[in-house]
Image (cartoon, rainbow, N blue to C red; front, side, top):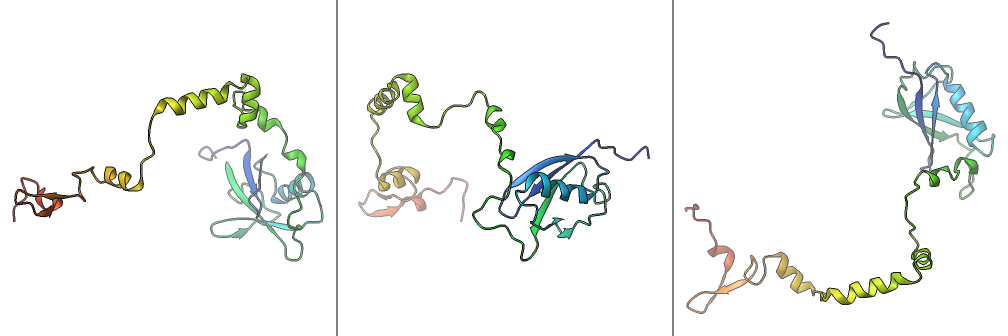
Amino acid sequence: MKKAKLFTHAQLRICFPDGMSISANFYPNEKIQKVQKLISEQALLSKDLLFDLYVTPPRRILPLQKTLVEEDLLPAARVFVSWKKGNLPSPGVPYIKPELFSSSIVSSFPDSKKVNDNDDRKQNGGSLNKKKKSNESGSGKKKMSEEELMKRMMGGAGGFLSKKKNSSGEKKNSSKSTKPSWFKK
């Protein structure tokens, strides 16, 4: 008993087949049946949807009469929902209650910035466009062609792929002439 780890709660992430998930905390001695009841009554719009809960790997359906401790779901676990045959939610129709998607998530990021430029222009009096234009005109950088970019990536004009002329005027590959000094045949 002294060596046994004690957990005050178990955090379960319940994952649905379409990628949606819900997180909830349970007491360790609660039964899987209580978890399934909570999902059907508190999370799903229709109580008529029948489903099983399972964990993976290997895929193992959780028996309803066992507790979270007995199924080794402590301190946290990912539990998956599988719809029973003939009892699937209609495609494109929401099956999770909309109040679970509350606006509390948005308020948890108080220092966030707006993504929409139109809102920023209204706040700055239209100065956002002026800043962008001044940065573009002041940079003076030209767009490089694909060939110039390849030359630059491969070491410029005298780089790895370029061909040099030796003293006799014939072209030779620069990769052959640039052997390290320590290299011997």
